[in-house]
Image 1 (tube, rainbow, N blue to C red):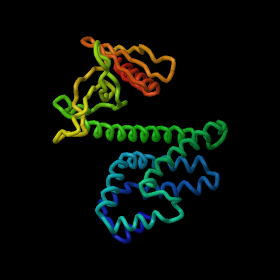
Image 2: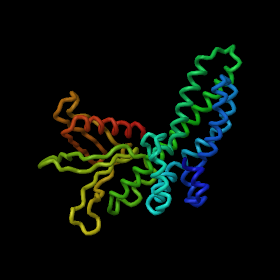
Image 3: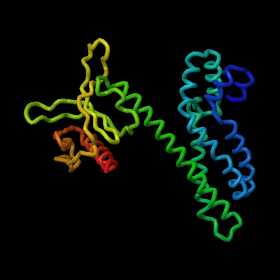
Image 4: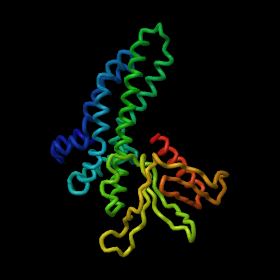
Length: 288
């Protein structure tokens, strides 16, 4: 419905088509080889042959970000392609799904394969002629599914880092997110020794907590961004929940102690406070 017709129509150049669909055709071919084996009950033989194609899923996952970017770019600038995609998406076979929803389906199918093969291996006795093939296939498919998951997590993290880097400004913010893992962000009230609590935006990474202050709405160049005010290394943090243990509706207070400073952070949202506590605990444990 998409790739074959696009090849025939020439609505996309070969390089654009490759960026968009990656190794979709090769994955389709591997599935076509597997299908008759499953239908005829030749589980071990079929899955053993299918495992020779597993690297395709890793390649497909690595191209996922580029694929979605290419799709959005072509939908925006290529009128002929946009009209074709909208026409095909309207087919009843897709149940209202758009092309951007269809592109990740091979990776979702890999997860289904893993569930199927692991269940088959666990329920096939050691005396069965399929046992060795199924056990090996379960291990290989599970390993590939884990690699695909890791690639997806890294891509999500990269997107978070790009978004956060765009929000931060100031000398301390330059290159701040490079090589880090994003964990959480949100507003918290900083409670000073005297005076009123001050709202600040916090960005938590695997190794550092960033406190930032919003730029004035009328700032000429950087309205909507945050000025980086302080960096707190999580390896040196001691975390304590001062109050808010009971899960009541009144929020709570967290104490973060560093060698040169102590932070008291408050939230009126109990659920959000618990999320912060869990995320901070995870960051601290990852540094020890």
